[in-house]
Image (cartoon, rainbow, N blue to C red):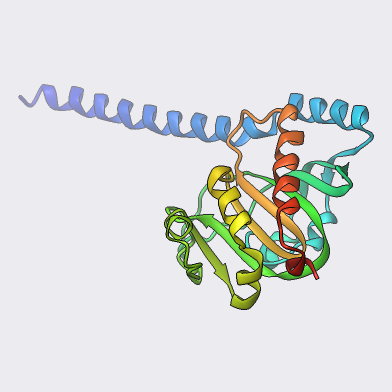
Length: 228
């Protein structure tokens, strides 16, 4: 039995080393997959064909945004693979972004969480209303109940201006969101309507226009009194 102990130790040590190597490789692949240079090249070609603008990195555009998911620290981060332009008469931006991470004190993670962000300019700044999937809503979100059972089961709404949320989330808007659930969170706030979702790779330039179209379709349904 004592002769088997060194062998067991070697096997255990090899397993631990193998696990560490796998985790490192997994993290490296995960962190680099969303930064595929081919995606940037495709976006540059798309922008040129549509009369839009493309920049592989922009350090200033995030100053336009505030609050969740950007936060104060987020505004100092760059926007990657930025596409800006006008679509259906509305200015928009699409970019990749690394939101600030909230980790317990003393903890560190080598993994990078990328997000893909789409923003369409509003005709006037508005109060903040956050609409998220009820199953994944942030814990800090102030739960505002619309009074529509189907909508309230599907979405959580966070706002500090309930009268405005009442005007914004009209019946046509609620019905459209139920029929066309967003891929990620939606936020009306300040000068933009934005949506974002996790970007773990697989993004293609052909996804830009449909995503901006969905935001424009939603804006077309907003009641006039919500945009004054």
